[in-house]
Amino acid sequence: MIQRILVAISIPFFFLLQSCVFTYLKLGDIVPNFMVLIACIYGFFYGEKTGAICGFFCGLLIDIFFSPMLGLNALIIMLIAYINGGFSDLFYAEDIRLPLILITLSDVSYGLMYYIIVFLLRGRLGIGYYMLNVIFPEVFYTLLVSLVIYPILLAIDTFFKNYRIRKEREKQDV
Amino acid sequence: MSPIVKSKGERFTLPGKYLLLILTCICILLMVLTYGTTVFDVPTSTVAGKILVPFERGISRAGEWLRNRRDELNSVQSLLEENERLKEQIARLTEENTILTQERYELIDMQNLLELSETYYSYNKVGARIIAKDPGNWYDSFIIDKGTDDGLALDMNVIAGGGLIGRITKIGPNWARVTSIISDGMNVSGQVVSSDLTLIVSGDLEMADKGLLSFSQLTDPDGAVIKGDKVVTSNISDKYLPGLLIGYIDTVTNDANNLTKSGTITCATDFDYLETVLVITDMKNNDYE
Image 1 (cartoon, rainbow over the protein chains, first blue to last red):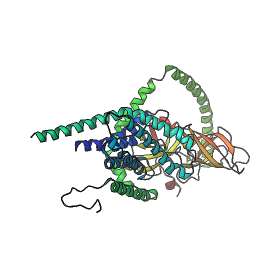
Image 2 (image 1 turned 90 degrees about the vertical axis):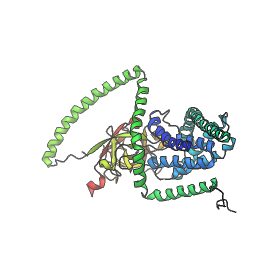
Image 3 (image 1 turned 90 degrees about the horizontal axis):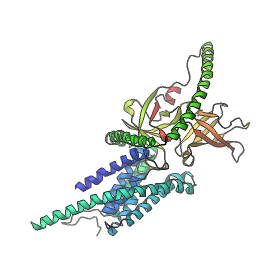
Image 4 (image 1 turned 45 degrees about the horizontal axis):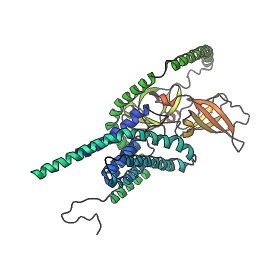
């Protein structure tokens, strides 16, 4: 339960971190994409359903404040988190390569989908430019940030898992 | 048997696929509903304003502090150079100012003669702080800390540093979203000051990175528009007040049809270093209807 509340609180927390703090810490005019990052990690940790719900709310937050219409980011991030949830069976705490690969693919696909829906449909065809100047730098910066954030979230997750196992053992002993 | 039918003694769980389907439907429904209308604007912006905006106010201060520390690390050398450049600019501006003051007296005299006491473009303004910026890298919009409670309304123009920034595109009780003119897909009807020719200024992601805007549909057969000409908002724009500075002409090229011209404009304001903006509380339709 506490873990769920923590997950719920962390979504607005990372949103604020991204929109209020990291916009001042731009690298080459690019902000890392925390929303895709945590939706992706939560999907990977907790499976498809939790991932989809987290992704939905992550996207909705962006939509309410910044998007021309509601539901666009919510849909894209939710789908990404859901697909990431499919890999939760392969989750091993020691393995950091798979989550990093997943985050990379997720951020690239977020960028591509957003480009197709919002830019390509309006006749902006310069995909090469957008790839080189928006999508790839964003992926790179997001990966850099995830090297810090993933271990922290992993530590919290492991703590709660151990806590639950201990509780169950105590129950069995009694 | 369908997996969502609840059987006896079994705890009800919704399979992931169905949850995804339901949420996708909600998203699509929301998109369709909010694309053209503003049905959910009031509830969502009120709730978001109550819960998140107070945090945004505090945290953006922290962000500013961090950036200031980073900027302090910039070498003294660059500051000295900048100082030198600014001194030159001051000298130039002072000279320009003297000439302008003289002209102003002349103007007032003339206006008095013509009984035109009203100065044209003096609008009422309200200052506001930027508390959050678009987290995505595709658009350029930001959140300011004032909303309907402070007398702001949708479509009000926003300026900073003497130039046009954008207009309010979404508003809550204590916050408002400003979409800047450099955002891809934003169009402003502009006017070249020296020749009164009109053009359409549009934001473009590719150009915004270089601090440029693109313009099109300039009808200028005589080639009167040259680099450095001042561009302001035009009288015929329906959302923007006339006479707000947009920028200066950078390049002009002939279109393939040989009738119109297009090119680029250098922005009057540096969009990267905005902290406070001025919202013009006069609105186009109020004044001119």
